[in-house]
Every structure is written in structure tokens, then in C-alpha cells.
Amino acid sequence: MAEVAKEQRSVSSFLKQNVDYELATQKVAFKRFEEPFVIREITNKEIDVLRKKATHRRKNPATGQVEETQDQEKFGELMVTASVVFPPLDNEELQKSYGCLADPVGLLKEMLKVGEMTDLSSEVMKLSGINQDNLDELVDEVKK
Image 1 (cartoon, one colour):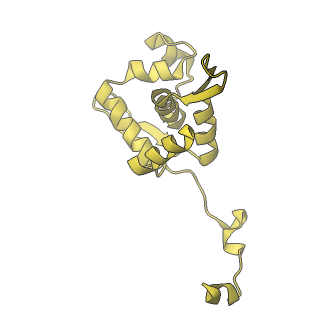
Image 2 (tube, one colour):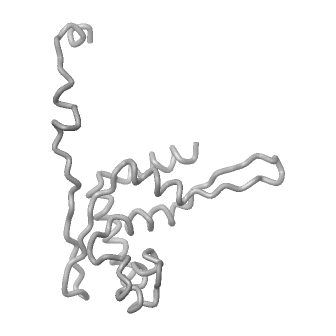
Image 3 (tube, helix red, strand yellow):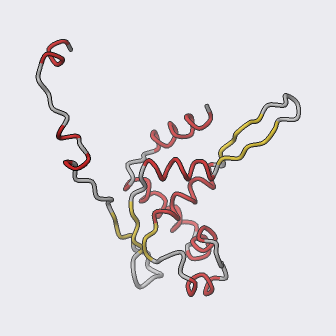
């Protein structure tokens, strides 16, 4: 470890302008649709925002303490919805077609069968580098 500290090292390869970071995208095809869904990876900043949206605060009447709990199902739904690039879930015509105005999560649930939603969710997790162990760590982190 001391040898590493003695070496002259440069952080230049870690500077933002020197790092190639383009969000990865992927096509996910379902037999029922002529065109594939296009998803993109979710960033760390987005994960934080989605986590907050899925967190509820309530006052425990017994202790008087404010407690936070995260709705895992809502977090997962928000994450999948945020990753969908195509079809655009904010498209009014698409929302009207499925009767889900201003509700991207509801729209996606109406569009996809349960197995398709599971498959799409799995692909979003893989693309974003989240495996089950990472997801469990995220849940544990939120619980703390």
C-alpha cells in the first residue's frame, strides 16, 4: 500500500472531461408490439430522486418519532418508467389510448402484461448495473 502512495499518479484520467460517459440504451422487444421498447440506464442522481419519491414519512403515534419507509414496489415502478425512452410515456395520444392521462406508471402497467413488466424491469436493472445484491444493498441503505 505504501508503494502505491510513493508512485506519482495523475487523476487526469478520472476528470469528467476525460471520461467517456454516455448513457447506455437498449431495445426490448415484445411480440405484441410492432416496435421494441427502448430503455436507458438510470444514473445515481436519478436513483436518489426516485428513492425520495417512493419514501413516505409518518409520525409514529406511539413514540412521536417521524419514521421513513420506502415503498419498494413504487420505487421499482418509478425506476422502470424513468428508463423508458420509447414509446414516450408522456405522449398524450398514447395516454388517452390506454385511459391513463398524466400517469406514466399506470400507462406502463396498462400497456404491459405482468411477465412483460417483469422482463422490462429486469432489463432496466441489468442495463443500470443493478443486480439483486445491489438492489438489496439499496433497500438496506434506505432502511437505515
